[in-house]
Image 1 (cartoon, rainbow, N blue to C red):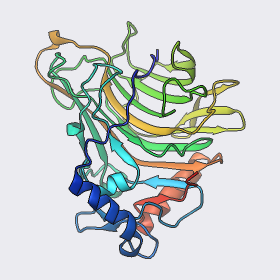
Image 2: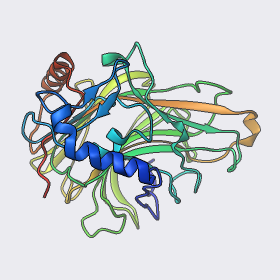
Image 3: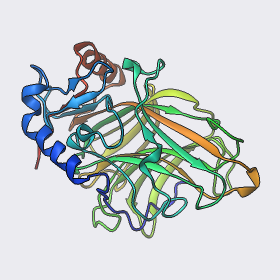
Length: 322
């Protein structure tokens, strides 16, 4: 079952060295001119974004990213409103968050041939553990349609199987103690956790983080592979669906009450030194799409994303800034 989120949860900007910050400012001021007629990021020969406008033109009330970046310190990543966590706190193995596991490799199974990969690793000790998380910044997401194409792993990419790993995707309030706390969780645990055997996918809507107040529905089956994972939060209900199939709906107080950021996270519930050796687990995100204040059906989400790829549009942000 889902557990309380991280306390404390900090925003950390350690990836922004002075040269990187200057590059970000340059990208923000000049990206529209260099990004092509539609205002999207310019693209290098290897497909990575080289410069970016923070808000290229496109459908109103839309956020879309296909994660065409060179690495965690790519200035376009920050200009487009993403940060990779390197701070303290939980969940999982406290104070083991690192940007070392974040990369943007070519992938023939990904739409567009490139993906965001979050690789968590452990040898069963805190010192030998690295958890990884990416989040949006700006807190602009509220009611609407959240969709992401995500690859879930049932086995480690390297080492022995058995870790209690959590592969998660969730919009969440910027503060755990907010009076209007909101969180909408997908958490996949191929080997289970907290005394519950796997595989298990939890879909959970939160009203309060501490003490925890949430409703959840577990799904006891394997989900290895690529899936379009959606949450549609409109008209007083939050509906979770995967590949167009409805999984769970929450209502009443278990719906968004304030603007949120979206996170993708790969972490460990506990340490299992008895497994021996180093283990690595991969969570991959192909793209993320959000439509403000509208319930977009699965087929329409996929068509919109297909059109972005066909047009060579890697990034769109036409959300209101206030």
